[in-house]
Amino acid sequence: MSLTANDVKKIAHLARLGIAEQDVEHYAKDLSSVLELMTQMGRLNTAGVTPMAHPLDQMQRLREDAVTETDQRDHFQTIAPQTEAGLYLVPKVID
Image 1 (tube, rainbow, N blue to C red):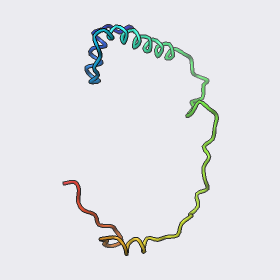
Image 2 (tube, helix red, strand yellow):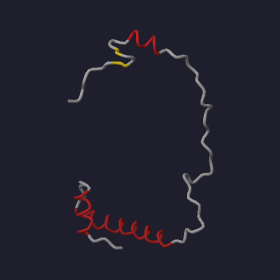
Image 3 (tube, rainbow, N blue to C red):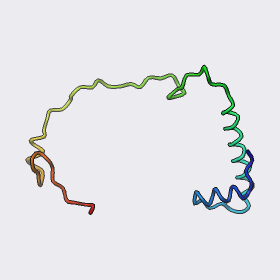
């Protein structure tokens, strides 16, 4: 797919981007190249390819899900400016 200068101007307008007039042809060429690459990639047979979440075969190091702090809820409730029924009362900020 080849983009024209008018296509680039329309895309720039929709994206609210300012493009200098002398750069429009350059952008048209670059964007057309990207679209051609996407077209080529779309034609590839990926039937036997397993989807990947990340290109590197690495595992996320996770820490053990264990409680490391004591429950201080009652203490925090006593020093809070306003509480009611175990909830913190805060000023209304949205009407």
